[in-house]
Image (cartoon, rainbow, N blue to C red; front, side):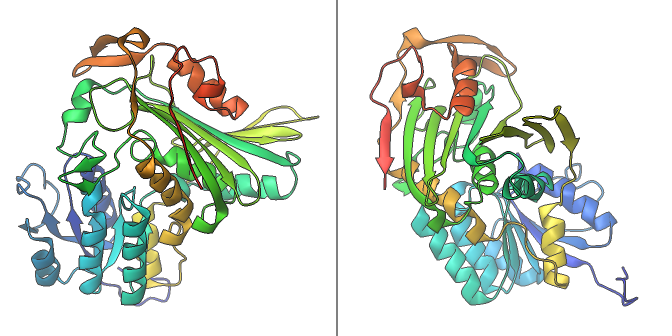
Length: 391
């Protein structure tokens, strides 16, 4: 490959840790970047090696269940880590010891202490770390920030986010750590807001201009579950920033119908809605008709390669996820989720077996985003002690 100066650039060797499940998307993306001449898949770390069909399109690739040994033998410059949450920090620091840069799947760690250990260790090693919040690679985020900062919707009053997804009971059995707050005494902190709908939290914080740890004043959490799991499958949080801006995020994996998650920015003279998986923005403001736009997106692995080989700034360095980790920490320290009594949910057939549906939850999630309210402040049918506040 040649860069703009005409010099030949050798594709960066990459090791992928965790290539099945969600890791499959990383494998496909590495293949896309291989075809562009940016990277080369040098190794795959999996407990069970990938077969020829799973590696179709790739040249001979080293495989091992020993990540440390694989990093040493391949000389990888970049590691993509898509493994259980509780393994993230150790694997990232292992890559750093080999001088490799890291794309680390979200959430970056199950606790704020583990996050700081990982982020500080990588900084000390002099390697880059990109946290895999793909929504923060959306060009819609800076575009919305520009509208807010220019006063396009007046005074910023708050930000609400909503995520209503359908997940079968089997989803919580897909791995030993799924649906767990702890495993063998180690924090996992899986849950609707910390893992599958974590992008809603991180994107809301980014749009509020409050993505760093020091931007968070306090967090209130209400954690519930309809499924027979440890973690929450239906939850909401209120985050108050040091600027005094309230943010709410309401989420469920027990929705009546699957819906696109979104973030609503409320202003004194208008509002902006971002459907962050689609990079689609709706601007509504006084004296104007509605304006809808669709924005591009920068791939985070491609951005990391550009950072390593040139001067391209990282889109999602660890410090820009510090506020999100403050929310994770608040959820970690909260009492275990309250089990919703049988009267408040029912079972329906799902794609892979039965699924549990919380009655009326879709409307509550939407109302939360538009009113900046917690479930306990709405007309939720349950009246349970669900709130925990963390300074």
